[in-house]
Length: 111
Length: 113
Image (tube, rainbow over all chains, first blue to last red; front, side, top):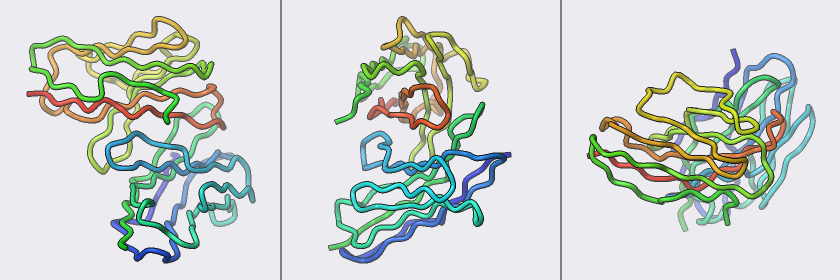
């Protein structure tokens, strides 16, 4: 079946550090891939997406590249801020299916 | 600012009460969703409406009753809930295509006494 695996958290970084959150997936065919972010007390916000192999999604300094050969969609940011502290969810969807989430990775950025 | 609006933001109810959660979107989306989310966990799909018709019910107990009065509105009627139903309830909408993202509201924080 289809599934998404994320690195476990919590991840704690100092401000301006480099961020990588690993995400790998299992799916038949060619899924679309998404990163969502959930700030405390809020719903999920779409951060970025990629719909085919080698696509790079980017938004607010975050990037992720759809790697079909490694079935990965790792989230990166060159310099994190305190305001990036949140829970990050990797997700996939495919034709005829439903949105499948990873377990989430909590990020805490310290000043 | 979220484009999916949910009301109320917080709700406390007893196990014998009847209440409703409301969701509204004005993006012209044809699919709407209800999710349940426990703390620090991913959302769990409950119901999907496509073109105002219920298309997916993920074996949700009958004490949860969804309703889609029109393409912009989605309700979740609650009756005789249990303490384990306390959670964040999220509404989402999308264009309905699998390669398009879902847009989420900020949720209703539900507490069952």
